[in-house]
Length: 260
Image 1 (cartoon, rainbow, N blue to C red):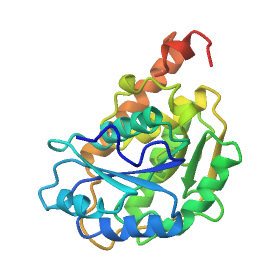
Image 2: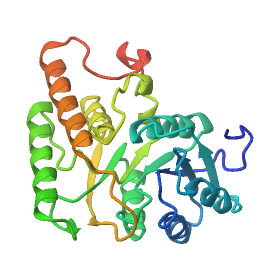
Image 3: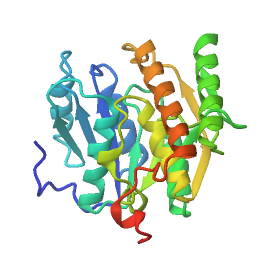
């Protein structure tokens, strides 16, 4: 469990790193974050990794800027981020960063995303499908799945965002607090689509910053047919709500009533 009086509380920036079997990549990711943003704090959320990632996380937590939280079993990326976002809000952080722990997201690009958030964006998305964005070492079918999925989501959700599935993000906790995190019903990567689309519909100022996504060279990708199907099913369901439901958004009661 996370101690409530941990020294990481009440800082400006909390980087959330959900992990499952990432012992070979996690140390370099954490080291890179702290080198790029020395004032950042890192919260590792491990889903009971059988490969010993949790032990590595505990060792990294010897640095007072790093904290490890252990969950019992694989509960999904979405629930890890929902829990982490709530921690960021409750502890008074100004920004929460979502990023992969496998080295696919380049830590060197994090300052640019943070700068966009500091300039006023409530959500900053590290975007692959805009000028300046690139993907390295993806086979053609992964590119096709990503581009097709993004196109379908944009049409179904009437979204202007160009990379709804990107997992490299900075969020202002004042906008996170407007979300009803318990109502977000995605367990996997569809959580990225659901949160971005919900914030877009709420009028959140969103910036898309080009990034270079590099396919992991160690460990194994978590992408699967089941994950793709969950995202597609979610997009179609949300698109239906958008058109035919009176309350399609996962927003707080205060926000639903028109409050700030």
